Each structure stands twice: as C-alpha cells, then as structure tokens.
Length: 288
Ligand code: ATP
Image (cartoon, rainbow, N blue to C red; front, side):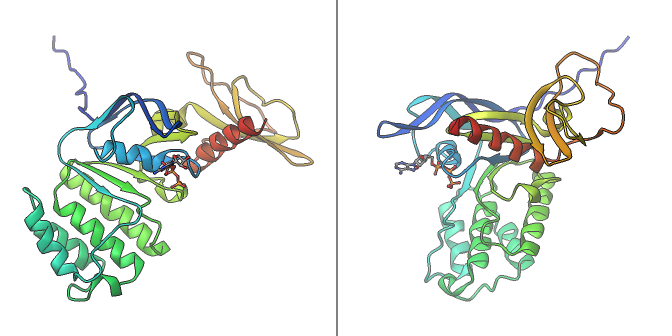
C-alpha cells in the first residue's frame, strides 16, 4: 500500500505578534499570518489601516516594536511613491540595478519595459507617472526577488495597464514561483489575480488566508425584506431596501451547507463583496 502526502508549501512571509508604533500610537498590533511561497496576496484595508507600515516592516526597512516579521529569500519592495531618479533614463536605472544587485537579470527588467513600451532613453522625470511606475517594477523584477512587495502598484496606471500589469505579474509568478504581496484599494481588479487575502483594520489583521477557503465559507443571500437571513450563520453584512434584503453570511463550521428555498437566491460572494462587507462592519463598530 502506498500513501501519498500532499506537499506543504514553504512559508515565504511570516508574522508573529507583530506590532509597530509611531510614538505612542500603534499602527500595527498583534498581526500573525503565514503566507505560503508562490502565492499572490492582496493586502487590503481602509486608509490608515497599516498596509504601508506592514509592507515596510516586511521589507526590513522598519523595525517591529513587538513580535516579529520577515520574508524568506531576496526581497524587493516597490513603495507607493515609486521613486526613480528624475535625471536618469530607464537605461541608466537598469545599469544602476546591475551595479547595486548581487543577483541581476537585466533581460527580465528590459523585457518588462519593452512590454509596456517605456522609452529607454528618455529622462524618467519626463515620463508619465504610469511609465515611471513601470521603471520601478522593472528594477524590482530585475533583482529576481523571491518575495515582491508592492505598495499600491496599480495606483498610477490606466485601466488597461492595470489589467496588463496584473496579468504580467501572474505570468512572472508562474514562471519563477516568487511570492507577491500587493496592497490595493482596487479590490475588484484583483479577482482572478490574488489567491490569498490579508485584510487589515485599524492595524489588526481582521481576516487572512486562502481566498477560496475564505470565500467558500461565506454566502450572499438576496430575498424579500427580512430582519434575518434565510439560514443560520454569522451575519457579516445586512443591506435592506424597501422590499429586498441582502445578507453576507459566514456559514457555521462543521455543519452541512444549508439549502435555502425560493424566493431567496444565494450566490458566492466576490472578493470585493467580502472585503467591502468586512470593512463596512469595522467602520460601523468604530462608529457605534
Ligand atoms: P493608506 O491606504 O492611506 O496608504 P495605510 O493602510 O498604508 O494607509 P499606513 O500608512 O501604514 O496605512 O498608516 C497606518 C497608521 O500609522 C496611520 O494612522 C498613520 O497616520 C500612521 N503613520 C504612518 N506613518 C507614520 C509616520 N511616519 N509617523 C507617524 N505616524 C505614521
């Protein structure tokens, strides 16, 4: 008889009891998670939730005040400002990358710039914000990171470029097995891209884990105006109009999935449904 053992992916990024404060105010508190290698994690949360702080700690640019956090292997971080030297051309930036990085893949960096039609010989300061961002991505990818940390990578990009960047990033993940953590406010554009979620609220990790698992434990019910959902579960969000109610419910663990009858209609929540419901719930609690 042979037994097969599911391979367990190694952890690429880990936090344990992580806390970081600025002066007396905690920006992060009690954060704990394991992100397996090869995943693409969406780091989401309201303004000021602590996303940039978490990425900066993971990048090793800020020390934790409590607990620990770290990433395994070579780490590249593209900050929100995506700084590039204004007087350098993209070609100069790649030369600098070759000098500064012990491991450097110039072809990979150049391919990224060609893919996004970034001129190599124009001063970066004269490139559009979106193209400057592409130079910063190329520099990061050229360093062949095992873990790529991106703070709001889609912010300066037009809608088509956003789609292309996310698709190209997925291609890079598939080709290299690198792990990506990217913070964003444009959650809808991450469905089909992210397979892991880190959801921060007021510096704490509100939800985290494999996205299929997380979304699979939730269901959205829509039906006639009602104060309660048609099946048992934890109500994450309830929305009502005059004659209709919609509930996002966390299904109870260890019980068979409930079957609801018409007129109620159920559907799986999207990543955006789930994130907005969770953020709405924390805002209501904070305001209560
Ligand atoms: P956003 O979505 O607006 O970029 P964020 O989730 O990235 O926000 P952070 O920038 O990490 O959040 O900020 C978390 C908290 O820490 C906020 O309350 C912020 O005001 C505070 N903070 C961030 N940087 C500093 C700093 N250098 N000095 C003092 N407080 C800071």
